Length: 168
Image 1 (tube, rainbow, N blue to C red):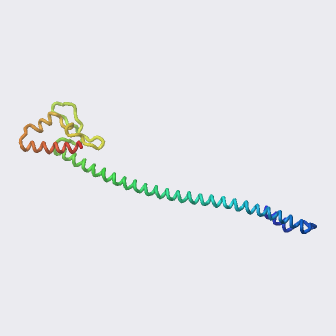
Image 2: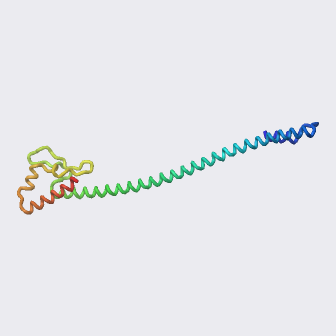
Image 3: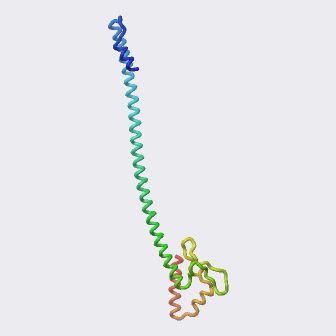
């Protein structure tokens, strides 16, 4: 298209006088100027679009960086939660061993009193120990505390303190 206009400007018709050539060339120059203006506008639009895409790319990069930072924080929190869980699991295991030492916890077996009352399951449920009061039947509690001499009272105080720790 542009080549055709330039060729017409250079190859004006033979027999045209200079004024006609001048008018023809002015028309061609106006067409070329209009084309140049159109191309400038198109270039400006494309440039604006490229700048917009660059801003979007920068925003995307910033968002990606924020997401990476948040993900890193979540991973750190996850690790802290795992460590806290492991500490609680170790603490729970210590309590279980202490209960086993006192004959309250019997390795996944229910505690049954001598009268064959309904069994109380002493196994942990969802990672928790059963309260000691539920684990001991009334008869076992009576057998464990037959009288209140100094040693038994002290043992009972320790066990009540332990019970309170478990119920917290």
